[in-house]
Amino acid sequence: MEETYEYSDEVIAKLGDAIVWTTILAAIHQDGVIDEEERAEAIKQTHIRTFSSEEYLQPIYEKLDLHFERDFDAYSAMLPEAYDAKEAFIQKRIEESMDVLNEVGPVFTTEFGRNLESIYDKVFTANSTVFQSFAFPLLSAHIERHKKGLK
Image (cartoon, rainbow, N blue to C red; front, side, top):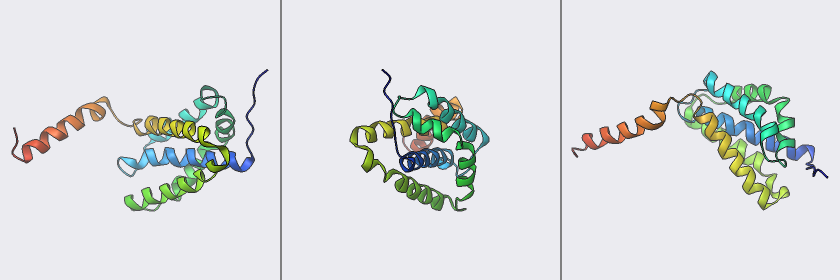
């Protein structure tokens, strides 16, 4: 017998919002701009997770997949201009969305948090090259050491 996971419409909507806002945060985090590659990765990851995530998360992703692209664009349009204000705005929206986790329970909360981290990482690295991901931090550290007169 297949186990089904049922959530209220409010829980699904709030957790879906948390996913959308997390992907937007990942997209703007590095430079404050949502690149097309980041947007495309957010859409792709949400769609893939409708069938690849844990069974108890699939109902959330299935519902979200129906309107994710529309929500991503609408929520992105709500962002303030200033970079710091963008991050603060998004953090507040994520917190509001995650309030519903108190109703769902601690085990789900932990797993949902891991899932958000995973989707964040995928979107965050969508517009990064291998050079940016690995070489740039090493070069930056090397440059900083030389600025300080260290060899």
